[in-house]
Length: 361
Image (cartoon, rainbow, N blue to C red; front, side):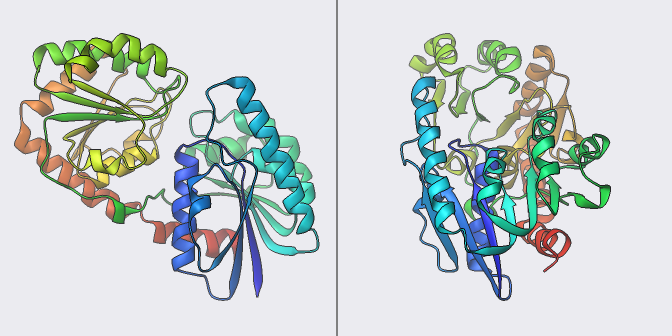
């Protein structure tokens, strides 16, 4: 029997955490032959509250959610790190066949855990330069391999000569849990789901476009879901529309409830939309898509169900108008989006890639 360990060292709530949480749930329901899986995860992660049958979960740190206060968050992160070190020390006699470092922070603890083969998942599609900061660690850890989320990242990592080419892989797809997504009667509603941070197209596109769109379509509603450092500024600018009822803004644990009734989904990232978890969830929920034409967006947003735009206010408003004035076609586009993503972005495909190509068990 071979042991596999995952290190999820993060206090954030973003695409990385959602993606791997879905993977852990799938692995628990579909154990791979005679493998045992151990998951080291911060108590602040929702997955930590899950009762697993086939995965041994070892929580560490504090269960307090990520704080907006920088000083407080530094303390909580420090508590997490100390807690993980103690947990790993108690496991020091355990030798793992595979150690999978899910986040960059996880790599900091490589000396406290032994793996015959080590995997690092590089998923920061918007900031590929991040890999350079991890280069010394990746070269220091023996038998290291890199799992890249996209072909663009794979090409970039190879160009940096961090590891031999045969040790760098790219995933054939991303994935979500499609069983959570469903479709109800669509409303004249637009959704934007993201972390409220820079490079998400919030200041450049979303905020200046909303007044223009609502002036032409006053009965339209916006669902702006998320949280982050730009939240206070966004609330100030959008307050009149929030008070009027044209906009709902806040964080939701189950955004698929909103997406099921949403007609149009906006993915406005500055550098890369592929493979946003929220974008995949919107497609699975039969939303027509408007996305900035950047990075590998073209590989996931096809003309049959999406409109790719230049990152300009006029282009965004024009695309919204086009979809709202032809509701029948917009509904057909949503159905096509759901068919596409459920066929091409499945967890089963990633599961086979992970175990057969990278782990090679």
